[in-house]
Length: 543
Image: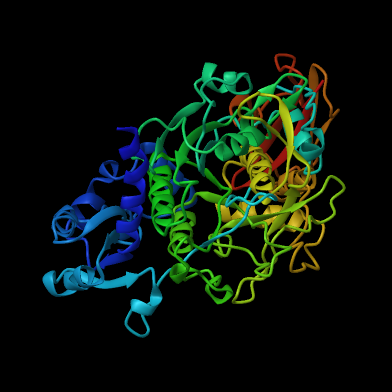
């Protein structure tokens, strides 16, 4: 019996190698009107709320693949269905070349078929290959209230970005939902570093797309290490960049192989994330080569519109999610460039620096093949700390695999501070705060962002000037004096919000210019004074 278990994988591998991967694209979605009329059959209320907040309408891409089409292809001779994407209206199949080509003549609802081996496609047909980037510095395929925190070993990687400023002002990722799409999450359900997540129900769910299993605490340890940089909490020893965020954990990467299917599984996970109302996706994976070299990508394919995963990522961003991904670890290799989906225009691509903000030599280069600046920004990815998935102790590692989640967590905290910003606005603000924004380079991109500066600039930009209005003292004690020098202001309202955006005090046309704020706890608040269509927002500090 043991002998059979040794030989069976070899036989399966030989059989699959003789088959080809292909994407079957469908012409339409006959049930579109029915689904669009009933949005909750496609998306959760949280997902719909995210769309509403960002002014994004439902469209054809939100509609599931037509079930009858899927079932007919699944039943076709010689065809095995491995995955599907509603966003791209495509079904991922494997089979003999003739059997796959026969689908075109058998079914009128097929628009086109793209083989992963582009030499098998008709001239001019778009197709996808993959070369998986080494996204750890060693040879692997992954990219790799007002509290005062003692970050322990994580101090430098957090303070470099100004994440400590956001934390100290109460922004720790609370209310932000993050999906981590990776290669596995072993021991996240047992390690002490994640006990807070488990106790506070911050792990909202997950799925193993590789095995089609609800047990996502399996697979390669890479995902556990990535998650630790965002979510781990070991008091006075190690703290992630967004310890109060909530998480979905999705496994799409099979560490034992390199096949085009992993791109499709990633898109499936991104679609699941969208439907659940996820705000941010972290992807510490990248693709440029496969086990079968016929599927390999070239640099010219890193143009933001060729690979399956990149096109899926673009659609994910158009749904209002903010996608953060590793640039890649090929800076020292002949390839040298970023990988997919890091080439996507609307994805936030993160390269790596060391502890003193010098570029890590392994950090992949831009620009994209069509000349756009990539990476977008940089975080610490050389000698960066993670939590080891076996021992639970802190360990040094290298790779853009880890600069990406470090950045993801700080972005989550920043978006918590400015929840009404769109995903595109958040990315633009962060880019502009980076130290090389005015002079980006191929490997540095726009450089290392400063989230404290971004916070202050954004807060100021969100203030609408109302002439003749001021408050003092600020910081305030029990009483606050409102000075309204403009005699034209006859009807006004004052609202005070806490850092979570909850209204805590309200005053309307007070008879005195002194208001009592003694009921407020010490901390940072936003005070809004409005008069008709004009208003001013001021940061109020309560002692």
